[in-house]
Structures are given as C-alpha cells and as structure tokens.
Image (cartoon, rainbow, N blue to C red; front, top):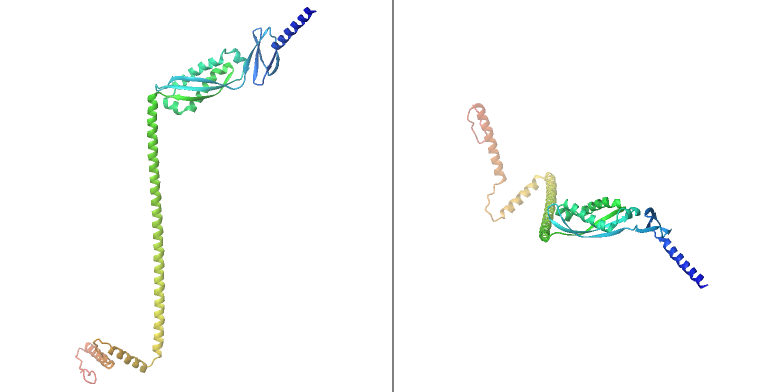
Length: 318
C-alpha cells in the first residue's frame, strides 16, 4: 500500500515538473525562439506555448526598444585634434530569429562596432564641425550603425551624442573666442543702439523743422492775407470817402467854397510858423500874364518878328 502511494506521489511530481517545463507563457513584447534538436523552428508567441523539454531549447527575445550606452571614446578629427565622445544608441529587434542566430552577444558586438564607427565618422570631420554639427554627426552614426546591425535583425532607431570633450588647450581657446565674440556683440549692439537713437533724434528734429516751417509759412500766408484784406478795406474806404467828397463838392456853390477858403486862411494864420500868403487874385493875374506870354511867343515863332506888349494886350505885327 505504501509502495503504491509513494509511486503515485513520484508520478505526480514528475508530471508536474514535466508540465512546468513544457509550458511557456509569453507577453506581447516577448518572443520565444524555439530550437528542436538543434534546428530553429521559428519564433513563438505571444500567449501559451507548449514545448518538449527533452528535445526543445528556447531563447527569450525582448521586442521593446532598448538603449546601449557607449562610454567615452577617444577619436582624432580631420585636423588632428583628439577629442573624447560618448553617446547613446537606441535599438529595437525586428527579427527575433536572426537576433539569436546571427549574433551571439548583441550588446558586446554593438559596443565595439559603435566605437569603430565613431572613430570613422569623427575622422572625416574637422573639430569645428564636430562641435557645431552634432545633429549631422548623430544622423551619420545612426545610418552607419544601422547598416551593420540590420543583418542581425536589429534596427538602430536613434543615436544621441551626449558629451564632447576637446583638449584643454582647445577648450581655453574656445573660452577666449567666446568671450571675444560676446564683447564684439555687445559693442555692435551698443553701436546699433546709438545709431538708432541718433536716427530717431535726427528724424524728430527734421519733423520739428518741417512743422515749424509749415507753421511759419501758414503764419506768413495768413499775415499777407490779412494785410491784403486791410489794404483792400482801406482802399475801399478811401474810394468811398472820395466819392462822398466829390459828390458833396459838386453840390456846393462858389460862396461855400469862398467861405471854406477863408476858413483855411484863418487856420493857417493862427499857426506860429512864418508864412507867405498869396491872394487868389494875384495868382489869377500871374496866370493871365503867362497866357499872354505864351501867345506872343507863338506869334514870334510864326513870322520871325518880335512881338510888342501894351497895357491893353499884345500889339499887331507890321
């Protein structure tokens, strides 16, 4: 009885061990590469997978994107400047069977191929290009590494250079250059500011001068217009006054004129200045003498004889 019970227990234990080694459960991001009697029969999964633990061997493959840190590598640039560079490589398995069959240790192989590829890429670039064209260097490294890892069933998705350490002498020169460049930019910025300020001030003065000239012009135009209007009004007033005087004078008789003449003489006589007054009759007499002289001169010029003057008037010629 005990022997049968022991045998049953042993059988159960063997069956449980066999079952535990015969069943595999793979997740969505995992694949199981199955080898039966040493021959690959493909990748299995995801889900429940039954295997024969006696004749089957398995390798687990992770399909998620992974990264590999490449430590500092010393490389020499095209212009013979030694620099130290480290970067990170991101990769993803796209063929589980090839990743198991084609390469034994992908991490070690990728680390070595990355170091040699880095030296090759840096050797084709100058130091300035390495320092300034990091994106371009990342792209070249990714393409070159992907060309190698593709035959292993692995895709290099991205390469990122983390740190570039040039020699101490180069770092010191770069620091001095950066300081000089910042000083130059500061001087240029200050000069541009002064230039803009001077242009703004000159523009403001120009606008002020233009506005002042426009104001003076408008003032002169208004003053000239006012003078013209004033002169026109004065001329109109004088013309109206003359018309009034002329109309009034036409309406006056000789007695009124005589009274005004006497009043003017009276006002002139009241002045303290020395005056010589010629009566109107004397002026009329002189006007008559002038008329007689003009007539005699006309007669002399016609017949060539001298005219004679009598008290009654000019004599007849012989």
